[in-house]
Image (cartoon, rainbow, N blue to C red; front, side, top):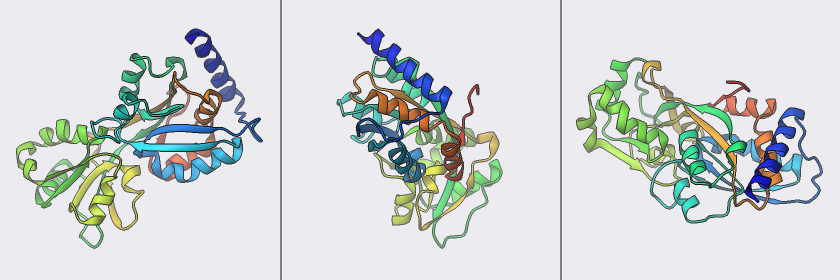
Length: 266
């Protein structure tokens, strides 16, 4: 049965991607359940309604980090059996779920690359983070630094701070933001002076100042991928969403919100 379902999904997704055709005036309106990384939240303010207009379907989206153990974290939502037709998350995290049989491997599609940036509270001077030394100084100068429990936060604590030689110094000033709340929201509220997270997530929050990306030699670009759930009730709608997210119109929205679309063959 799974083989037949996988064949059906592969054929449906391939046909949609090759033809660029989406269901306009859908045969039946479907509620498509989506689990998604917050890196896409700003883009989906436009992409969600666009998909719904073209398909007649309705998206029900649950946001959360691709890693972590909070109730909002996508791995926890999946483990707890939350309704899902399609999931959009950091590729290594999605691959782990695919290996556990949660998603059809032949439906996995890379969508965008998401890079890490820096933001500060509104009204604060913008620190210079353009070089390794200047970023190190900005982090050590800040009284508090926020990051998520997701992919970017894992990189920041496990790789960035040690590479900068400041892991010990950052212990007392680190603020981990758990669950689906964005780092920018915590900065806006005053929980931290400076924050690091995916650029698209920082730019999604009004009332803070986006400073800029990490220096290129310290940058971490995470690929966000999509796949259809093996427990999906709306498989055609899920495949149509993945197809829609690979269209030129969707790519333009991704770029506008700070994400780098992945072209076919990349």
